[in-house]
Length: 254
Image 1 (cartoon, rainbow, N blue to C red):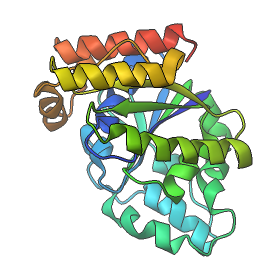
Image 2: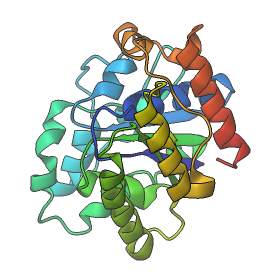
Image 3: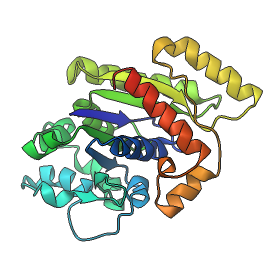
């Protein structure tokens, strides 16, 4: 089993689209995949076709640590029409950071939950993180083998990446020394001077972990979310790019 976090504290960079399409691509290759939505905006849950059903979500996993009550593991898991197993989120997750403030070992709640023997049946676990550097992200990184960072080619992108790198380093030193950055790649790529300059700067900074595959800027991404269908399941240019991204990651040993 390999656990991968998709992270960047900036919103709108393609984290959810990346999580969905890497998970779908892995499922197409015959891997058993679990996607976990750790974002209160619940975009990944919507993308996967989730409708509220009364069963536990990631909020309930976190809240169970506050009230010190066990939670039924299997009841948290759903399956999408594309064969991706997943644990959804909901808006209640918004306030969980403050609620967890006084909880001991709050950074390890997800890690402890995923120790259940059922999760060892998955080949990959893909975690979609929200646009914040807090307890939820720390929970994800503390259990992850690696983190993948999508970056929009924007002038302020580099500043935010420095803050994320600091959080990753803190987790590596104090909680999870196996964590590594799997790759940094550019999303919403267009043929402008700014995009080319920022992409070149990212490659200089990240060297070998900068991925050669980029994801173009296109309306197809939003359309696939609305249709609740992955890009890799259809004949989309972006789907082809995400397949290429997955192949590059697998070649690197993901």
